[in-house]
Image 1 (tube, one colour):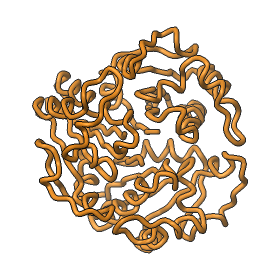
Image 2 (image 1 turned 180 degrees about the horizontal axis):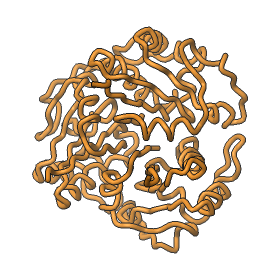
Image 3 (image 1 turned 60 degrees about the vertical axis):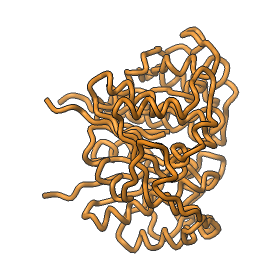
Length: 123
Length: 123
Length: 123
């Protein structure tokens, strides 16, 4: 049987820090469960994987967010960044502005993945 | 083959302006990709299509939100407003309070559409 | 035919009170429509069903949130609380900290339910 695939979509940004850990933690759990996870960063959510930003986020009992991201990448989870969001707010970000392990994709990718994946989660 | 259908659900309102553009942009891209999109406004999200409000929202490189909404309607995207949310916060809004191209529907509609559509997105 | 199942996921907490009523109202409507609903509380969302908190939330024309929760439980809707979120922010909550009718489950449960249910909603 093919692996099931779950898409985790991060639309909230560093202004809502308590919504940032769950996608990474659930994606790592998915790998353990033989599910194929991808995390998609959209709108303000792309700031979560912008170089320098997750290094400064640490909540409660969790590790620094950057370390959580690095472990997630090492587990083989794909991190996709919406290119349309990179120029949305008047900045012109480039792929180099994002942490290692991220891939920039066209805005239309999200529509396609939502139709293709077996489940989606929204944070 | 039948067209695939995506439901975009707006639960955030004008207090989170960076979550407001994506549904309209993705719905327009969906039309280009031969996908049938519908946008559903719920809770605080109904304020996004309330007359007078999107005229005052403009972020970064994006056009005034009202213009984005108008173009989305012209592309044939359906905009549905939850009737239950119209009286939720102590105001009594009527269908006339919403921008052209919106249709007011019963609260139960969302349950039905989520089960019927091929994919959903939550903002 | 088997009943269709909808999973409502609450990721927003008491800081966003206008996002808290919809899952309970839609779940009650689901019961009326012969749909099987479950509400899942994650991250900051677990505070919504923490003893003492929903008693203090009341918005617009809605009843006190605690009363809405109680009616939802009486209709047979399952309320699931993510155990991982209970220790996330430096507190160590126990099942007794949550209102009657809630059940604490492992973090992995969300991945499984998203794949199993016929539709999901995110608040």
